[in-house]
Length: 66
Image 1 (cartoon, rainbow, N blue to C red):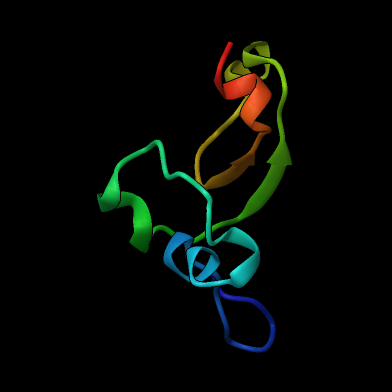
Image 2: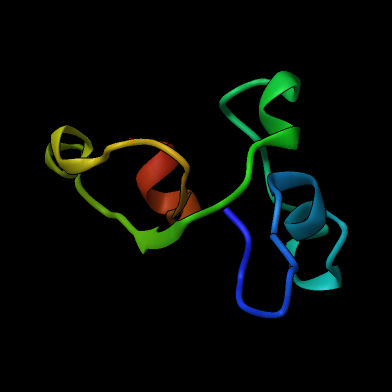
């Protein structure tokens, strides 16, 4: 996906940001080239059935440890 200014945002782009320096990529290194279309904050895996692909999912460590 390209934005009006011709730019796109990939998973790798996000992971280079200081804010995400301690983020853990759960989907595997091969997805780092994927372009992000939407960002969602998810605290319940029931939401997974609503995802269509190319979404960046943000969650808390508390959820990840459940």
